[in-house]
Image 1 (cartoon, rainbow, N blue to C red):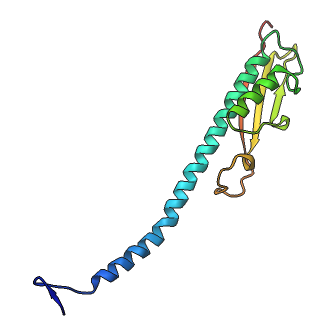
Image 2 (image 1 turned 90 degrees about the horizontal axis):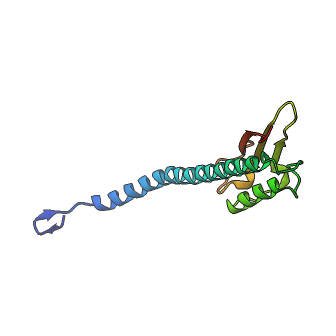
Image 3 (image 1 turned 45 degrees about the vertical axis):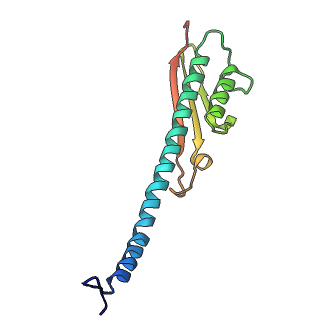
Length: 145
């Protein structure tokens, strides 16, 4: 054994480095799973908030007395407003994502639902094959009825 300044040196230093490497190899996948889960949840929350905001704005536009039916046509101000908000939120908007229940004389309520497929907004795909959609909905009574 070699003595350095009166201390006995053993070979435990190399074993400790190996143990640290094993611990790192075990902990890294768990930390990455948590990181990717946080990223995916944040993205889904952001898209849901964007869809909810767009549905609320579209519904508000549809219940105005000056807005004419059909609300879901691509030339209507309701569709244009929803498209603006979804695009500003970073979500590609198509007409298939929009569902509008128009008011009738017996039911003066307008409902707007925006449904975004999960596969279109997934950042990492970490969650896997999810068949659920991200959606936002809003219902309001038509003004002046």
